[in-house]
Length: 418
Image (cartoon, rainbow, N blue to C red; front, side, top):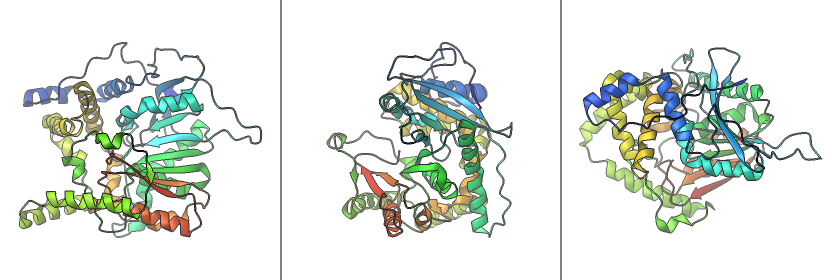
């Protein structure tokens, strides 16, 4: 059952400057917590024209929408899913030849993120809802964002890769399935970004009868083995606006030449990261792999930083969101800080699902051929993505060989991983 999040205040305070000194960082750290996370999220959502705060009534004008944030309680009273619902004021009626309503669109974020990171997309999504008359839901995965954060536990032996992966996936998939049944949704169009794309695919493999379409946005865990992905870009590369020449280009179904162009740029960027002495790089890599296999979380390291954490997050967010207006950058920083400092939970699944350097332990490219033949699957990559699209290309080939002719790979000109 969905329950409205209590109103914060009629006027939400403006996000403070990103801390540049220890004292400012200490002040930010001391004030962090659940209430600040709720405020930070609502700041971002209020950029959506159709967002209604808890104290505001819905609008009833035709061909509009109402967007609200709420918590959906699961059967375990300690578990809930944080949900942004964008509902049309003029729903599309059920067709006369079927008793099934149109499929519902559900959008899910990637690792360690939350629905607030879709803030730049929300007005476009709301416009689509208003015109099409079909609802869209954006969710925080259980154990991430502002969803509840139950203890994550894998009981399989470390050497039993299949069981480790299955138990880690189940943590997320069963919560998503319970959310679906609680909401009374029959079929979903699942849209997942990065790790969210991996988990959406895993859900479709486990519950194929509930999925009408899969859209995988720069999905993680596709490729089997070494590739040209540049995961370092996630931390080191700034978000940039598309080149003017790319702005008006339409997304295109990709051919081999398009995939090769993305891979060529990735190889060039990877060479720029190879500037440390080889011995030092090898030691760093060994320490990273050891920590990864031991189940350490980068967010756990951040939380251990205590009052230094806001400054560390600030260095990332100042660079990552540098092209946005200063207030939006501060809003995203504050949101990222709050969800990063929350209790560790779903983040610990990553080392069970992915091997070091972002390669899946059970790669999707070897699993997608088990999806229903009539399930449309679309892989989407950016023209400047750091995720290697070759695995998506091979997956489409395997899907078609299995009889799924509705699968395709699309490249968005000028876009990156996000």
